[in-house]
Length: 53
Image 1: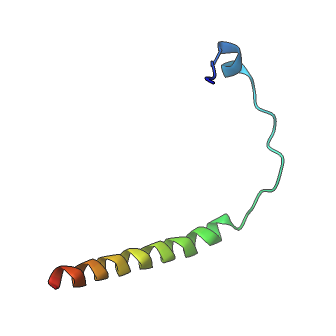
Image 2: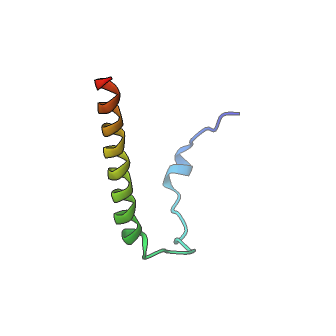
Image 3: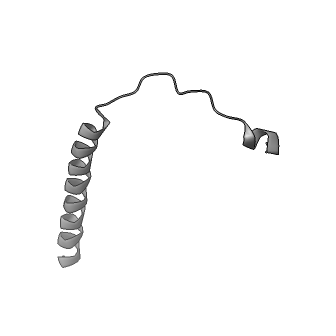
């Protein structure tokens, strides 16, 4: 099933956003960036150890 995009669809305005808006996302992003950096460093450490064997 394929969707066809018409010019009428492109000109329609979206309704105002309603729903939960989470102001704590920037606080979560900081922690997630720290976790990603720690995983990346651990991965590089393990790859370095494996290359020496």
